Image (cartoon, rainbow, N blue to C red; front, side):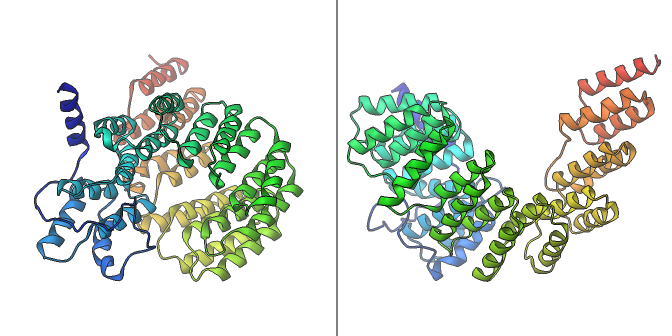
Amino acid sequence: MLRRAVAAEARRRISLAPARLAHELAQPQAESVVPERRGLEPSWVPLYKRISKVSHGRPPGIVAAEMDEWLRQRLRLSQDQVLAYVRELRKFKKNEGALELLDWMEARGANLSPGHQAVRLDLVSKVHGIQAAEEYFWSLPDISKSVKTYSCLLNCYGQHGLAYKGLDLYEKMKAKNMVLDKLVYNHLMKLYQKAGQPEKVRSTFEEMRESGISADKFTYFTLIESYITMNDLDTAEKILEELQKVAPVHWSLYTLMANNYIKVELFGKAEVALKKAEEVMDKAELHPWNVILSLHALCGNSTEVKRIWESLKSTFKKCLNRSYLVMLQGLSMIDDFESLQQIFQEWQSNHEHYDTRIANVMIKAYLDKGMRDEAEAIRQSTMAQGHCDEGMVYIFTEFYLDKSGVNTALEILRDAKNMVTAHKWVPSKELVSRFLKHYEESKDVAGAESFLECLKKLECLDPDAYEAMMQTYVVAGRT
């Protein structure tokens, strides 16, 4: 009885949705984690836009309130529709909203399948942490503790870096004589990799094959990664060559090899691997374009970087901020300053949403060239639009500290409270230490006092800063 009470309390604590209405949701025709269809039905889009808008950074209950309001208007709503929203929110990493939708469904009597419970377990892990995920898992009735939910918890342990717990859970699964599937083996191999036991990845792979379970791209990715971890690039290369003979190779395996060729400066081999990745990738998928572009930049190949960029732009109607960021970072890496300016200006005239990370790349490039006025102009423009972030604060303060312009750096820090408006910001301990060390070495008591006043306004004045101030007094001969 006590265990049941604890389990029930764990589930109540995790649940966010208020149970205000008792509308029944239409049950789906088949059990699946998410609907098979891609995208949303046109009639589903209006409600999705409403919940998507409030699904991140808002107090708990906002998504549930939107759903309740929709039902008050007597508008149609099916379980398939809500699960499609969950899928879309997860895709865009709006995990709080996705979890609240599942809680909202369950509060109204919807029966979640083991697959849906696995999704919920994953969301609880991401939103509330691994302890809450464990509580939710053990609160499930025995009939719901399926291979799917066990497998999901295995993955959660891997994501939180708790390989030893994952391996312990795997032993429990074996003791229950569970029939393991491909997903379990993939998670297990990843756990061994993260636990620093790459040699066990191979034996797990063999066990998987002996069980008659076919490997997929994730299996081979982890297998090849394990040999790379053991500094056996030759064997990793041979496995990839063997795989090429029997099955289509996913582009990520080629980029994995290319990345490691670059680390050991085998740039020729890296370029060959990147060409193969480009041949097999889905051209309609944006992510591989960005990965391949950035790896060509790491190779220092300006020609290939520009060729991939032009191909990317001709493939997609609209170039997204993420691609501009990757391109600008690549051009900065190969020090093509002229092209960097050109692409930045192109982004300024084309972007739909302002991305401070892109502005920061250009600011850093200008400062590296000693072009302070140009860098400052971007900062002022960004602040005027209300988009400044802490990355920009660090770039400027560290630049002026490196150039012994400590007074200017302090002015940037004083302005930080107005610059970083998205959340309460405090400087890192490393940055604070740099300021304090400068004042101590230069015996600048007045400067140190001004700095402590700045920390006070930023609400981050602590005993360590006071102690450093005392040391500055001592070296300056002040009592």
